[in-house]
Image (cartoon, rainbow, N blue to C red; front, top):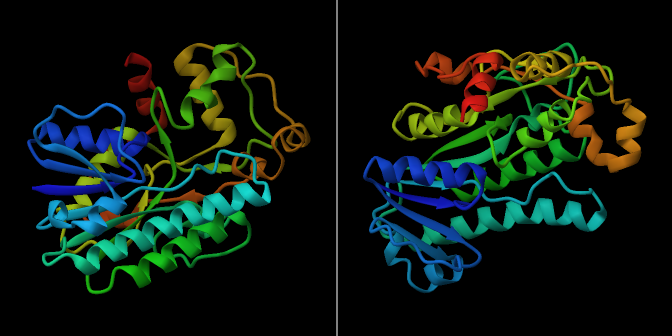
Length: 300
């Protein structure tokens, strides 16, 4: 099969690329610029949006387009930073839409990155794909605009909106920074510790994307989260247990707010999200529990 990955050099995209290449598929990576080092893999190629706009032939007859592109939320939410976060998502959706318009043979499915932030935050509610969007802060505003843009951009193509939680992996993503205080011996709950954390192991999100591509009756929102979300306090205790480090030094909310400003909302607020649609379609998680996920990451 032939896949187009937008944002294919990021944390999830690079793992997805490797997964499909190992299975013998052809992969096109699309971004704003080409990598400095060219690939030697016969079935891997890199393209810019401008290149494909001028000559869309390399993307013809692709089976799926995966759009993972977007500027990280993990930056100070200054007015300029917020604009970059929002525009990076909307611009890429628009570029993907323009590519689809000029293709003679379009892919049969689009997997569009999204996030669980669209549900808003709550200490007591549980959300699944049937839950409505609730715009109540900057992250939920971004994701709602992102999904609305995707709905308009991909008419008459099966579209999966992958609502991702915190993706756990080594080397990149959020987890290395989340476990660092524990490795230094100063780990503890953040704020009240009661806020929910909906997470997924990086192997499972790669497997889920592939599953969505190959399951024709899956469309619309799909929660990319493990079936057992935890509170921030439970998350920290599990890190302490797996890595044999103490869980004892709380980080007060006001200190976090002082340090990183509005960005602190990501760590101080949360939502309990269940992957109901994936489970209903028969998806099986490799790491359904947090302890299993962390034990695996520890051994890698």
